[in-house]
Length: 108
Image 1 (cartoon, rainbow, N blue to C red):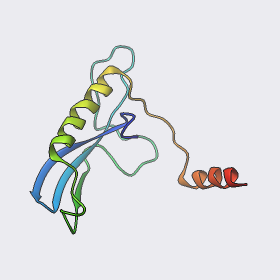
Image 2: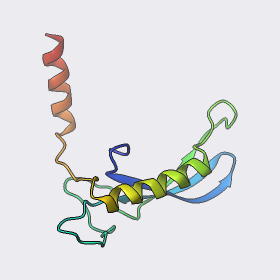
Image 3: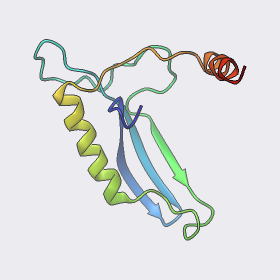
Image 4: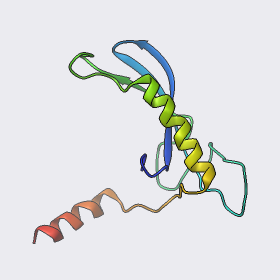
């Protein structure tokens, strides 16, 4: 969903080499030439809402580094561009239980 432009992560604060805070934002597809993105609109069937903050941590920054601050910043701006171009689109994704049914069918 991140690669398709459905949400963006905004870098908030790098506390040290082991801790990074990011803020989550759902991206909405623009309809009928509307130039405003409503970031605080909660999508269907998800407990995660725009503005939620997540703290990313690692026990070993050398072996398991945190995401690059610079790359997160670039991705944030690129996701905003995708959203304003109208290519980000909310979709109804199947429940997690449905995913396992599809896998089982493929294996049979």
